[in-house]
Amino acid sequence: MRPVRPLAAALAEGTVVLDGGLSNQLADQGADLSGELWSARLLADAPEQITAAHAAYVRAGARVLITASYQAGFEGFARRGIGRARAARLLARSVELARAAGETVRDEVWVAASVGPYGAMLADGSEYRGRYGRTVEELTRFHRPRIEALAAAEPDVLALETVPDTDEAEALLAAARGSGVPVWLSYTVAGGRTRAGQPLAEAFALAAGDDQVVAVGVNCCAPSDADRAVAMAAELTGKPVVVYPNSGERWDAEARGHRGPATFDPSRVLVWQAAGARLVGGCCRVGPAAVAGIGVALAAPR
Image 1 (cartoon, rainbow, N blue to C red):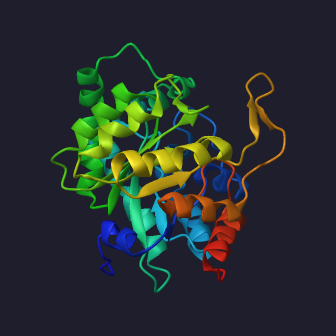
Image 2 (image 1 turned 180 degrees about the vertical axis):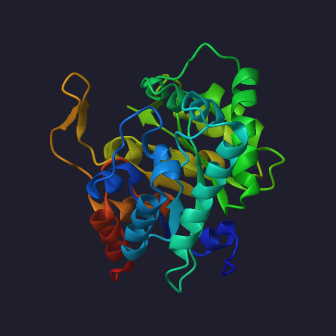
């Protein structure tokens, strides 16, 4: 394994390009994403598809790869008859697959182990609402075992992502404490608030004094909502900002499909960069072409 600098050191020197949506790339490759485990099912059934998806983003210029563990957890695997020992191996595999894809280029490539919210395990859309009726302590107990399993695989950073409310953010930070792996904290937001309705100032403040947090920001949101959040995150925390919104298309729950135009514009990263963003990429339905466009925008003379 080729050594890389700590991600925090790279962020102190400039902007690093993240990958895009893993699920849309897997779907484009023909992978079957049906079922509650979503892309995590492929860790057991078709790991080569995950490797290929990561490699597509590496070729597009991504230098941080987010693992296929967003919806992976001991509870979800147990519902498929997968015991804890094998589930832990599958969580480790998510890191190994991303690491292998990163080794295909000479550049430094960092692996971010995805830790999705409690609602992702429920697979009922509640990660976009939060407020599950669980205490911070209960959520901490839920998250800690899989964070420990992912940390044991030695990713470069834990991506505490698509966090819908401050209670879960507090729990995730507590669960990651002592893991020995730095984290980034990224909320899913709408209209200048968390999905649960809390002010972003309150949400970002949780990361302000936490030394384990190397970046804070937003993901899985409309690009326009990301515009509002980046400057606030930088100002309130003094930390590098991570930002990776969706394509901007609207999800129609009844029709089970996306509607409306995509509004993700790769050149928008220049606005985010000027406001303090140091990790930039895309989330749902943002593919390798858009990620390549981010690299082009960042490299253009100004």
